[in-house]
Length: 497
Ligand code: GLN
Image (tube, rainbow, N blue to C red; front, side, top):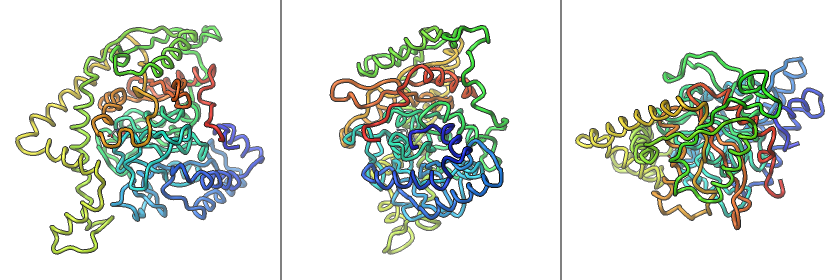
């Protein structure tokens, strides 16, 4: 049951092979049995089972909907009424939100049943999930490996089949990178497509929510229900809700395409900067094999260039901390969250509260962010970074003159060992090289499982990145789905699942 796709689970519900309640109970048992992975921060069976019973009642009344009665896990960065909403931080460890994030509200309205809140790097800052106040998450493929971050709990939950789908957020790669490191499929849509209302803010000009699931088809279903205009988010885009499944199974260009070459006419751009020295050999081999598969499906490969790729790291690590330093100023011990137990006066209360409530990485970002925004440094760092960000976005537009989709690796290596980079923030930041520029440009990007590492890393998955132009999500999902129809990387599961 737990290995079924959302469409298969839908059919099981509709034919009454299983009820929403039984489905929820099944996944809750799996979550309980897999506690060692530390994928969840909050599990609350009474709340889950109530929602499942309500879904069963809707079904019994004859109501139909693609997601009605299907379980979902939410990254703990989305606030949820009744559940903990900690963002992986001690600052919010006991915080219970009085309202639901728009994403949570929409999926609940579609009848999805919340299984729990997934572990994450504190305030979504990290690439390995080792920055969580609630401890690291283990990669279900290899328990000595990190699951990626910051949506590592969501990724591990889906990879270990503790949930058929989970929500994630991506500021500089946090949907794509953990999806890649755990062998699942995840999509970060165009900035502004999914409401940020109720998503605890890290870097507001970059944060974007999206689904993480087994397949592109499952992601398409859930993305449709998550996205759409929200008047409560000032950066939400005024665009109609889309059916992201509409291109699945269709040929790329026209109905005349041969059945075994459905992607004839598709031009895939390969940025030469994504295949340079920093890319490990095993990842490269898996990506090359996936690209050959795309050629067999009829696509043609073209060389493109994204010349400012290297600068995306310093640019992102100026802009994201700058925005974070501003967003995190609200955690002052006065309004909500942690407050130091003892203090002398107001200033002392702020100081103690914030030194106790935030972890090391968050403090590092606040320091960097405050520095680059301060008088005298703003022009040299922040403004300069914004200018290069503009050029990075333009580079993508130049590349899209020559191709329809861009492909490359998500991560320069497969998952690394727990603790391996934990004391070296710079090494950790370098691991984001292929995901940051997409976020800086506001473009949609996804990760599709396409193989495994070699030698001692033979059980560690590799993800292929697909980057589309603005609002091309439906087409990206079509391209990912075409690959998944002829390969079975997305169907592989870790031993014992
Ligand atoms: N790894 C990046 C960071 O640490 C991206 C995180 C994210 O996308 N939330 O900031």
